[in-house]
Image 1 (tube, protein in one colour):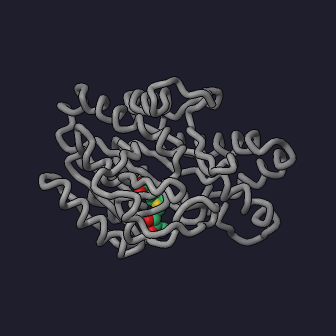
Image 2 (tube, protein in one colour; image 1 turned 135 degrees about the vertical axis):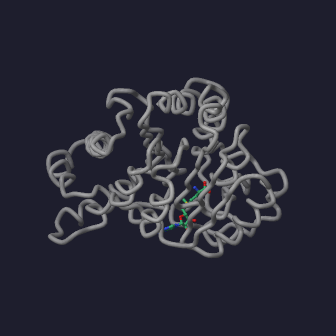
Length: 304
Ligand SMILES: C[S@@+](CC[C@H](N)C(=O)[O-])C[C@H]1O[C@@H](n2cnc3c(N)ncnc32)[C@H](O)[C@@H]1O
């Protein structure tokens, strides 16, 4: 579903000229048209569509005639890799065009220009789906979405893909957990945390790291492991995050020792940017995620 399928109607020449962004690799100056994309992200996510389609090919699709897709940080619907100029479909348009689509979509973005662009693109792509477009802060609007969906007889998937660390709060993840049969894909901002934790650790007040984790436990973990390898520290932090997801009812998260269960996106300098975490309340959800993470864009087994 989240494969960065190349969008054939838009050539690289039509892209605005490249301009260095924060990570020095991707275009960042024309959000109303395309958000930045990460080439490695495309590799990992090329399998998501196949994974999700097969998820719905099975009895699940017959069983659940209503299927909701919730994209709380939707973007304008297209992404561009600044380095190559390649334009990809973003998560909302991929979700709309997957082989076995959802019946209902909720797209949220705080930037009105993104939602205008997405609305035009989304409505042109799908005539039959029920689509709600919301301009708002995802953290503010989550409760309203829950009120509408929490008892809906539907199968639900939420994608929480903010730009970085500060946009997604734990409170929002906890709010969404009230929705029955909700699977989650969450952007874990490894680089954002690595950069922010040293200062946040010294701070007495509530920091964005506290808001992300929803408590101050991370400080203990950081205090104990900050001198170890970065990957080791993040292993502990992700395990803490996942243990909190379990408390919310997401029984099915991957075990800590399963290599590659949280695909890692890197920037051009090979520095870790972020990971995608998956959580499901149902064992079948993991089958979808297994398909997503087990093979790369060329059908090869991924090696992490
Ligand atoms: C990484 S992009 C999403 C990319 C999208 N998943 C895709 O595949 O194309 C993050 C988006 O979140 C939006 N955003 C940032 N802060 C937000 C907030 N507090 N609430 C909702 N949207 C927000 C940004 O405008 C941006 O479009």
